[in-house]
Each structure stands twice: as structure tokens, then as C-alpha cells.
Image (cartoon, rainbow, N blue to C red; front, side, top):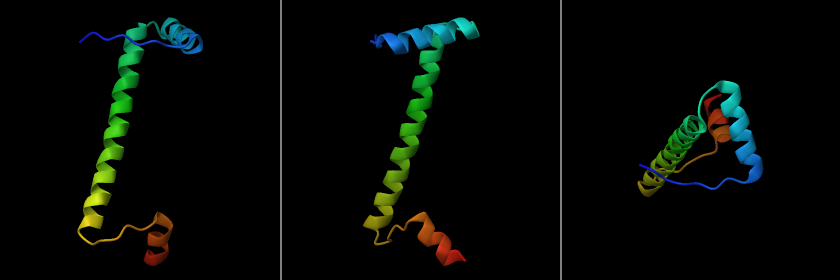
Length: 72
């Protein structure tokens, strides 16, 4: 799949410098960044879905600090 993106001058310069330092093409770094971003977004969406399902089932969510205090 081909796509195009527009980068601001600073980001483009940083990407070019990274490519030169690592010997990898700019496209390599762009693909890695997109893959990492998609994994992060998927993890957040999954966590939100789990929370929504728990709350829909009548199970309340709690802050981590509250849970830790309960476990002590």
C-alpha cells in the first residue's frame, strides 16, 4: 500500500538525521513508528472496551490507588 504524509520541516529533518545515523531508510522508521502507534492505540481501545463491558455488567471500576489500599 502506498500513502503520502506531510511532515513539518523539523520532523522531516529529524527523520532524515535518524535515517543517516542508523543507515536505515526513512520509510523503515516511519513503518516502525506507525506499527508502534497502532499497537498502543489498540491496547488502549481494548482496555477501554473491557472497562465499558465491566461497567455494563454492573461491576464498578476503581482507581489503582483505591484497589491497592483495599489489598493492603
